[in-house]
Length: 215
Image (tube, rainbow, N blue to C red; front, side, top):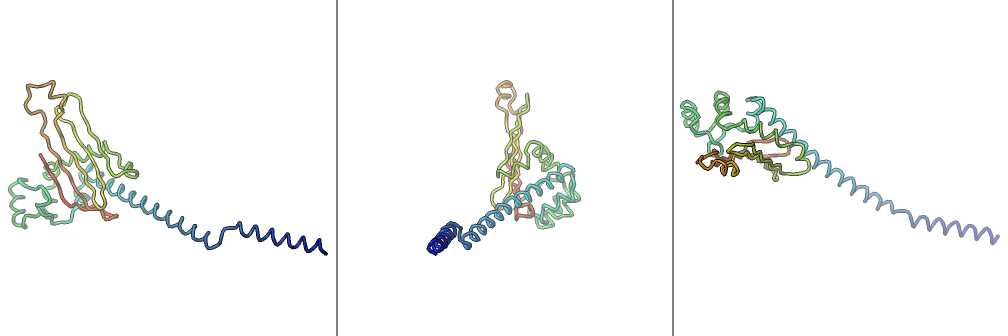
């Protein structure tokens, strides 16, 4: 009998010992919940970046194909001339701008698209997207590239910056110092300028906010 009791007591003690080693059910649920929340947060952040890259890619295709209908979707018309360079386009355009309270309407945009595309130097957007790889935005918030063609007086600067709820796409030119040294007789070898396009980003869509221009 003593042997049986001893065996039972040993079994109880062994079971109790094992139970103490098992994680508390509530603790396990708490850990699992915390991990799930963390995973969802990471997934959400990645999804938002993917959405931004997709939206930038949509803009890229629009400017490369000169699709005025698609490009127009990135603007909230009418656009005030205080946020956008739209001076000296042509006589009719300038007259309409004044008549519309110094604003660019969608109709004006469509009717003068070819001239505006050239005036804003939108061709440089195409070059920008050749050098900047949008997928790299999944791991960083700034993309930059400087293109220095050989034997040319200008070098070209391209960048995309994502800060909070704004995305700034900029392109411009600067004087190539190496070229200037080799051609001291040339006074001005490059028409320097910088055009920065600032867009609002709401997690779903890019919308033009303002243009900053220097040059």
